[in-house]
Image (cartoon, rainbow, N blue to C red; front, side):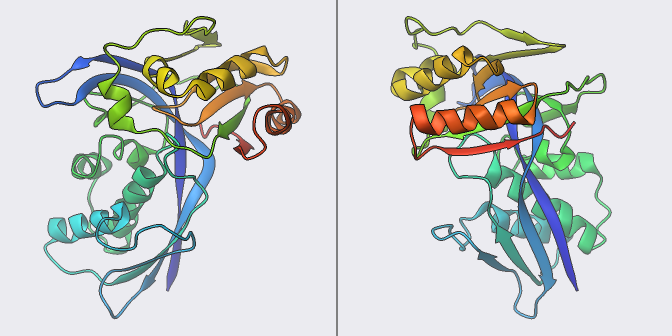
Length: 280
């Protein structure tokens, strides 16, 4: 028996930081949407307990991996040991602000819930996922959501209006430390020549309060946003989450591909890039 599950990544269309909480986390309100870019988790029955394999070198396969943490959490919830061989096919880059690791963990919970016929509701899985990370719960729903609290309070957007557009992702070779981005948020300042104002696209409002601290740390990401906004094909441009991925919305696939090709020529030939759609 083999079962394949897709684990989509996300972008934050908006991210507002509301202040620091007593528990040390920052209170946020963010709108997240899933993309058609996905990792894949392949589940096969095992005789050796929980096993994890990955096609990407350097991904830890021990208990520090969020997928195994999710599996252990499900074992604890169900009160029994589980035996599955999980093969993780990585397509979402690490440290990109796209939630790849969180998605893999959430889909592991969703998969084991189904494969073990555990009967947990989505709401129960979201509560369980909060033990793994702030944004894991979003990937249980895999639909446009507003996330609040420290990100673990997930509410699907019932009145969501999709827009006909293509999205292009650009990520440099370096990543961004999420804790460092939040720790610098309060005292960060806007850089001259960078537009941080909210952008309207149909019924969507695009803004990201973490651009200020991250752009101070990584001037190249400010340069990427400015470059994207100046492209004639770009409708809107923003950094996703705490970075280091930036994204642009375009009217057509050809426009998005043109932005990606020009970025590699004019900004950095080592940029990772992707063109696709929002799942909504």
